[in-house]
Image (tube, rainbow, N blue to C red; front, side, top):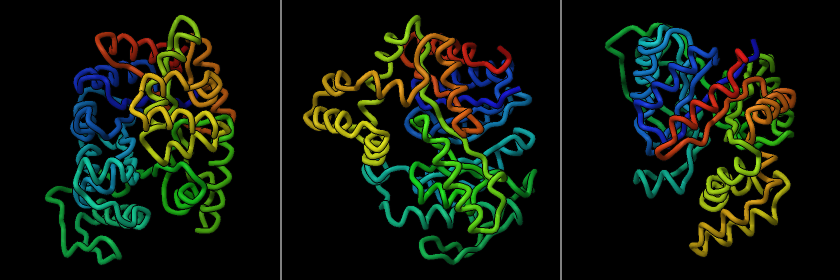
Amino acid sequence: MARIGVAFSGGLLPGDIVECVKLADELGYESAWVAEGHGGDQFAILAACAVATRRIKLGTSISSVFVRSATTIGMAAATVDQLSGGRFILGLGSSHRVQVEPEHGVPFVQPTQRLRETIDVVRGLVRDGVVAHAGKVITIEHFDLWFTPLRREIPIYVSALFPPMLQIGGEIADGVLLTWPTAESGRRAADNVAAGARRAGRAPADVDVASLIPCYVARDQYQAFDGMRNAVAFYAGFFPRYNRLLAESGFAEDVARIKAAFDAGDRAEAARRVPDALLAAITAAGTPEQCRAKVEAYRRSGIALPIISPRASGPTGMAMAREALHACAPSR
């Protein structure tokens, strides 16, 4: 059965996400991932999913290395892994300055080094049950777990958009997590992961290439595209890193026009400026058949684990999420 995951990034109540993950488990999805943001604590939601499911893997997509301490992340990971019987995957990333500083009051300093050191701390804590660390950005005198982790190693994936971080993922992680992918993303990711892995003396095949794929199922592709425009306009307008990613996907002029409208405070115009060609390039949006075909195209491009991320919100959010789950289920 082909590998496929599902991710949730807001728009649903925490309890509704648990119900969707239960359905994903029944439908044969390999993994379910919960984002960090404002939609509920990801580790709490995943803990509820752990006791409500029996097979599906459970991951964070991603947990920020700035808004929790490294030891707290390690303890949370070991907790969900224990509750799930060894099904947890820890997705880590730096998040964004535009979120970390104004929303959490934490200085966004040396994000790559903090990511590296957080991985070291988490691995040490899970492996030994106790950790001390004297690094460039993290210093821990002593922290010990008051329970024995179920597994001494928990898979760690890192969020990676550009070649430097993709190569770091190849050096130190068990997998990389992409987002807003184009047909070229999988190939570029695989090449850079391989370069990083070989530099560290690792086998490139040991590093999983996964990607969140924004997904919108509708009666036709144009309705689906309309359902995606606001999200793309927000990511292009608000997040500098995603603005760059989308611009470098071959849509620099379009992304600049979207950003100009967003900065002027006209979000409706920013959404109107999102072209169909951009939506076709970076999403799985359309009829169930079109969405399944796009997922397979991403798979052929080198993305070993496609992870659909349904755009689901409002009073019909649960119905939208369920439709996407059924449309892209591996058992079809």
